[in-house]
Image 1 (cartoon, protein in one colour):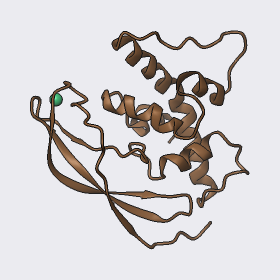
Image 2 (tube, helix red, strand yellow):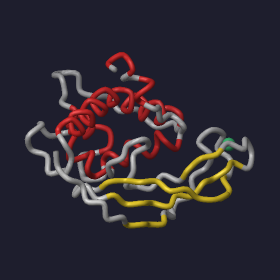
Image 3 (cartoon, rainbow, N blue to C red):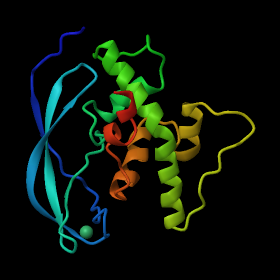
Image 4 (cartoon, rainbow, N blue to C red):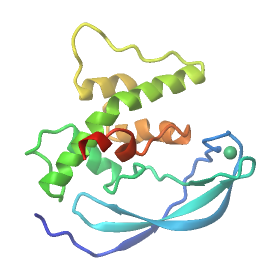
Length: 180
Ligand SMILES: [Zn+2]
């Protein structure tokens, strides 16, 4: 078990893009903020101040999603990227083995759903969906490459359109409850 540093850094999140309401597509108004913790690859905890937004039409509350975060996940998106596509011994993230194992389980369970969402969004926007080559089974790495490319930031490129379309699911309840 690695000891985690407790030094805290606070960051204010201001997304440059203006995202419409994930539920109804109308405008969001800023109504406040809340704290969100995240961990980087050294295990350091950062505190992000994230804006609370309310839809002017349907009145639902949403929270800004910074590029470095994945909903409901504590580690930064870049950490998750480097963990989930590697084998269990080669990670450089300061986390214990069970945390890394859970992260990989979470990702492998969720990936088919996420890629299905990306295609559903493409249909909705009138774009051609991704057709994966059917000649041989593709690795997770290859499948991701087909959809969003493998350059760093691929997880954010998967997560953001899905979260912004209100298609993100809380995986503990949706997929993993049978295993607990
Ligand atoms: Zn709305």
